[in-house]
Length: 76
Image 1: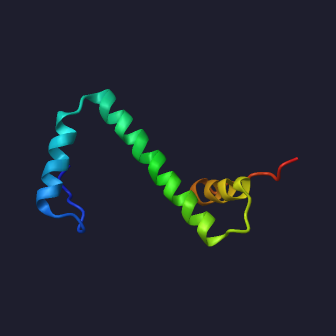
Image 2: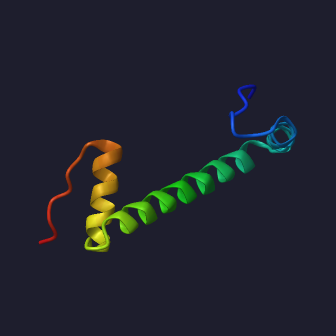
């Protein structure tokens, strides 16, 4: 992992890479899943903030539409 994000200072990036290097496969997988969940949570919160009129299901439907281009059917 050599491409340091522009908003991250070199020292922090080096420490991040060192932490990843010390992780075994299962730990890396858990970290990736946790990060994915956190990003999804932030995205859902952003949709909720921009569209307070939407229900929880509508917020998730919008996220699914943005991510996968799939429109969920309305709740029966």
